[in-house]
Length: 326
Length: 212
Image 1: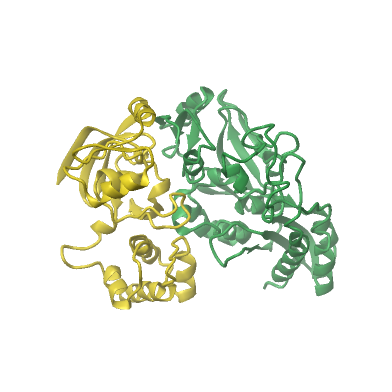
Image 2: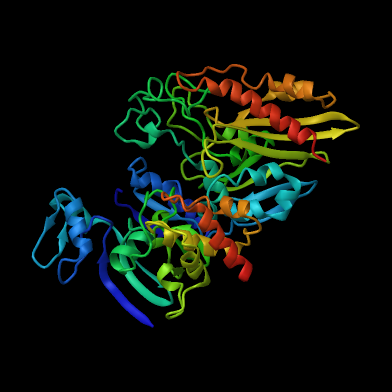
């Protein structure tokens, strides 16, 4: 681990001043400390923001919810409001171990970096870690990599489950900049596809601080749930996952929000699946037809061809599960 | 109780800074494992010259925390994890280093009553924190009920993961995630056991929770 200086801040203003001067924010630290130890991350200054007042979960008028950036994953996943309004989001926070959930925060969760082994191995070529060095995954062992949203420069998957739920529900990220300006970004614009600049992962400016994520209100009843398929039953990164939310009234699907994880370089919204559901009546045939669009545009690599079919089946199963919920 | 270790610079896990009056089992192991290290008379382990120089120059901070009821004030290299502070400097070697990356759970301790991975916790961030390790669970000679349950159920073979399993189990019981063997398995999944004692570990946690 490279040496670094450490400061603890007690106000957002103080944090932003430190961020403007190049300080790196640390909250739970579960990703950052790990990557610093591997020398993938080499910040010169850590700014400890854990004492900032960003730990509230509040209702938004009309039935939405705002989750402060410093709310621990363990707190958010157990929150009665979140579980009642958006089970899919609460469930998507249960992927990590109980220890990590006690430490890790909502803001850190959406800032977490890929688990691509070549990214984490400083002796391997990786355009995300070292722009221009190449991508060892393209010709290497790429079973866990992306079939969607990749480029010739990077095919690493995004690791966050929670981000998949936020993508499905079209959440927004609230950011505060060192000049004091507050901005809101649609979640779909927050995480960036690799393109030719895989080192840029978030649409975030120097010194900007995530203060909260907001999930908007939806017509009720809204049924939702998260399904994650892994190599083992618990505590593992996903091979394919599906976040599904449906508003069904009068026997007809009026709203459908669907996204996939574990298969793409960013959480992958599935508008073609959503469109196939809107205005239709739930049936086994409908779930299969809609899910048939889940892998549209997929470009599988040597070792991850199985994800094309796995993704369709994951989405189909979860559409049926949510569609048949009471 | 209070023990002041002020101005004793606590270095990162290079082995530098560790001093004992004679070669202990641990310094011998460290010497055997560290290529390029130097073992000098008296048992002090020194890292390579370059590493030692970096250690001297590295930023450090003073932090006061409570470990198993004892107030400790230390000056730590900012890079020091809680796990290394416990093992290398406070001589609390019950917490184990498995993966050192948050994946195995062998280093699990309680910080302010919550189970965490001490390998991913920077010691410098623990100002005012209350830390409980496996050494702090028993009351005198009386084992904590979960420790006793691990003995009664024979819930280990090699024992390396056991301190982490027990600390995680204590957290799991406090959190109330013990309503079924399935729930215990899920909420204990951050603790890996290579001997495969999971059935008995789950039983020990289940029985202790039921007696509570």
